[in-house]
Length: 145
Image 1 (cartoon, rainbow, N blue to C red):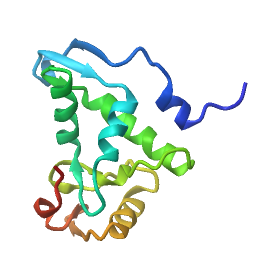
Image 2 (cartoon, rainbow, N blue to C red; image 1 turned 90 degrees about the vertical axis):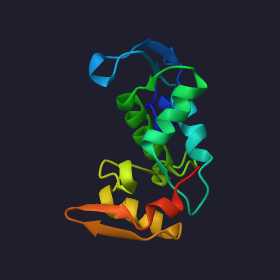
Image 3 (tube, one colour; image 1 turned 45 degrees about the horizontal axis):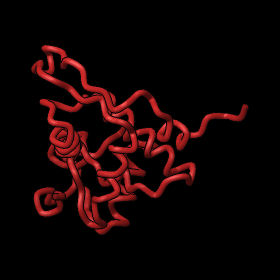
């Protein structure tokens, strides 16, 4: 059998979505472990020139499933898999439009900060450096939704 692609990882059943008890460290309650396609659908809705912070993405998923939170770890992993699938040419999801809190760029994306900054620049967004981190300039003007 051939090598598993990132698209295969996205489309695999995974026995997801799944609702579990959230760890106390994350506030307890009910927690969604989403399917990667659910994460991708939200990313696909973010228009050019806009960004979505990962916490907003997680909140939308949690609300869709009537749970308290959406797992931050698996959501982050799935965004990275979507980014890799984009690079392999199997999806068109604009993963770079998802940023960390306060518009911070994600160094874990393929190509690191440089590639994230380049993609955002192609979308017409400016990036500024604060200390040793990079952020979307005027983040509040570009947040979606």
